[in-house]
Image (cartoon, helix red, strand yellow):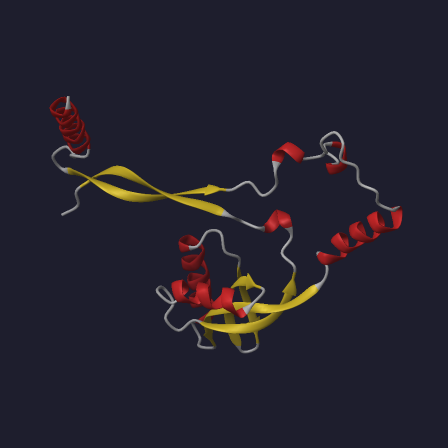
Length: 183
């Protein structure tokens, strides 16, 4: 019985390895696939949370509390907060405009889920990325960003709370793609 299980395991491993062998002139290359995550639980979309509570659960809440919560939620999108961003480009040369556009584009291609901003404050073109509420988040992001932008640094800025609709969360998976071998 053990011998049969061992033979089956060996054959299944051989089949798996043969499936990974590319035809002549081709190779398997890892490719990244970005899948946008759901921002809101779609089962509750457009429904009042208090109407879907299980039987026996009741919430006693005054109208004043309900109004205060809705006012706070509405004003949060207009409120400015002090946080951190990462400056990946800062220059005032004659080619700074074109270089800032190139830096912004290069960053967006490599980091599709991170907000990026390009600005001009006479005489400097600047590109800053991210909306980090504390310095530890910014430091963690800076470690990965410095691989592509070695001169990047953290700056303290004021910005609006990111709204729920503007958050871009992605799940990243790798996928094997068959491509011709390039000489």
